[in-house]
Image 1 (cartoon, rainbow, N blue to C red):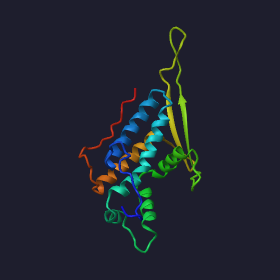
Image 2: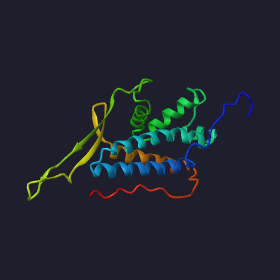
Image 3: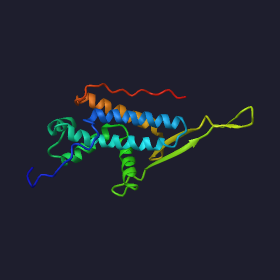
Image 4: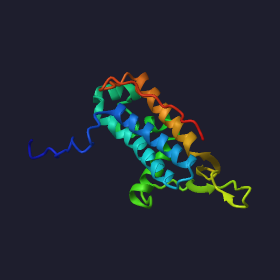
Amino acid sequence: MTSSEKPVNRHARFGLRGPYDLLRKMSHDWKRMRRYCANGRPECSFAALDFAISAWSMVDWIKEYVSHEDLKRIIGFDERGEGFSKQYYDFITKKIYKLRLCKEIANGSKHFIVSNNPDLTIKTKSSPFIRFQITSEDEIDTRYLRYYLRIREDGNLYYADEVFRKTWMSWRNFLKKEDIDQGSGEEVHLHTPEMP
């Protein structure tokens, strides 16, 4: 390494090797979020934050994993336009479903507040929903407790599980369409768990 080169660490990923491994992690986070929400556990927020961070991190993973020339081809890089990084981020943010929401949530969860170009139209909400049922012994049965994670953007309300499912599918389709190597060769699927 020359004195002008910046040191990098390529080993701080717990064995994840590339974008498809991160896509598998996103699938796991989504399933965990759905399971926790369905079982009335507030930890569903933890999994939602994990998903958003991974979805936004995929932008940088692809930038490092795919050759610069291939990325230029993928985004239709225009030498006369703004710099490569700006064109790349603009392209990806438009291409991947609701990635802008994931970016804001990821930055909010990493930094507690978003102070660098915050998108003030995006807000999240976590709320329990309890449908009480009175048993024959006059006790309250709370087996019907669920958590709902919602995202508000520009006045529109979305359920996080649906936004994240579509974001995941958008990333999967992008990786396939652009023929980005799977590394391990394992196919990645997102199976919707049955709701109890």
